[in-house]
Length: 107
Length: 120
Image 1 (cartoon, chains in turn green, orange):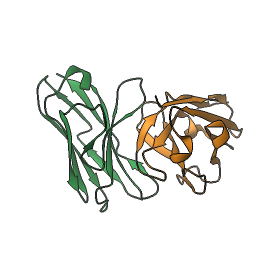
Image 2 (spheres, one colour; image 1 turned 180 degrees about the vertical axis):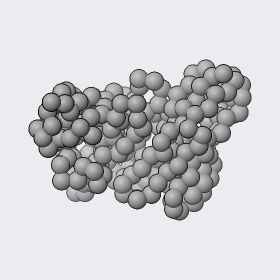
Image 3 (cartoon, rainbow over the protein chains, first blue to last red; image 1 turned 90 degrees about the vertical axis):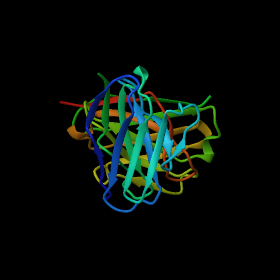
Image 4 (cartoon, chains in turn red, green; image 1 turned 90 degrees about the horizontal axis):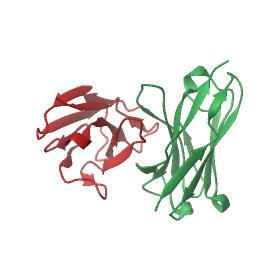
């Protein structure tokens, strides 16, 4: 099974700050990596697919990079509405697996 | 617009059975893979099961293999999750999610979730 390790597990930053979340895969997953945002009490929402492709309607302050085993999600200017937990997810190796999540809060 | 509506959750005793349903609308149901993803209270996301667009392939997490069964009915635009011999660790909110592809990739639309509590 492929393990997805996210860091940090939580962070607190000020509005306007640049925030970066890291996701490490236990083996090479090429570019088969997606990112999700889950706001409290809501279903997850696909943000970025295949490492760097923004899903329709996602603000341009979100971006993704990486290849192989190391990936990052960056919020260029943190906004109050970005308070959420963010998850990375690999495919198509079974079982499909998510990182444990990174909780983002406003300082 | 794309809509996924789950139902069937509730309180169930250990060892009993339960079937979850997810009715899809707003897209061509038979062109997309479908999945169930669960989230235990206060925990992260866990993929449970997936089914290809035509139902020809089903896939499961090891922890549910042999106990949970995913299926789909194209005529009803519905995907199901039959849960048998449920355990305490099956307690979670169960989300139905559409795959971005016909097979297995990422989840681009999610339902609101249906909670399942396994308790005697």
